[in-house]
Length: 338
Ligand code: 2P0
Image 1 (cartoon, protein in one colour):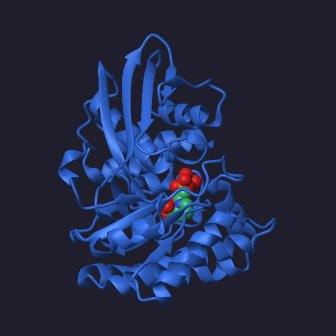
Image 2 (cartoon, rainbow, N blue to C red):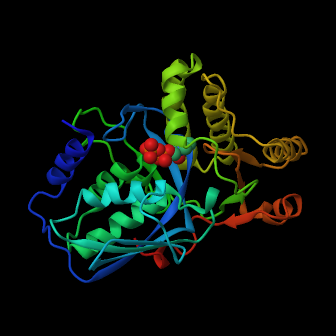
Image 3 (tube, protein in one colour):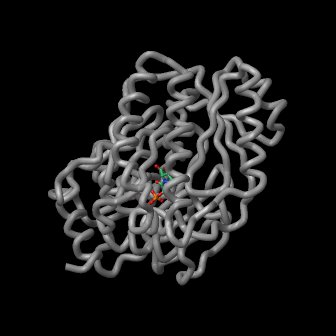
């Protein structure tokens, strides 16, 4: 079976009994998310099945809004500008849409991000979650969160977590058919939690995170230790969230992110996303912590830095990082449509 036919069979199974004819147009939004315990490594690359579970906090108002309409011909607008079909972003999006496309139907897609990401391209997590939610409306499926999560996962693994707000756990699952690998929203809220987004550079990444992940799994000796650390971090983080223990949450999230980067640096050829500005921000976080502030960092597969702190330190963080974009993940949850 080809990758496309395996994915199409998965979609048919999830949508069993649902309509396959789209009508009119639909719009949906989804939040970006920051993994506190990272998704790093696949056990199945066709269905985006992870080696371990992961845990994220959704970034409230930061994310993607996507409008999909039935149209006379395929057309894709990103931030209001038409994207050529051969661009990597467009190819990935159309491959995903083809999984749902009835014969002869074309789509007009418009997607905008509330935050510019590397190379000006949508975050794949919020992008595929918003697209899946828009398709749900366009086809009138009325899927529950679990099924939206299963479908969004096919576009990008981390998209399965962007189906929800707040804290979200992606259950790794163990089935070969991938039907038990989806995200669930945790009940706990933490209104005082803050995430700071530090954009170090918006230059295109030298290597897509998908490729960095595959290379690391294939060649890093340190990766062998990753599944065990991730499983342990996931449990510690869930406990820290349940107890609102910020020091444990921050320390575990930071150590998890740095361990992920250590596996990349030890891959071959090595993958090092850090820029001088990344290191400068890391050292500033560590100095502030040394001085007594409860401030922690995380990073994804890229040079940009995310800060974790509590509402009481907002002003001090703004002073230390004047360009930081503050996110209160538990504000205005009801105002976002996804
Ligand atoms: C995460 N990342 O948990 C991890 C941490 C990046 C570093 O999920 O191949 O774009 O599409 O499933 O979801 C980014 O990888 O990878 C990611 P695919 P994805 O957020």
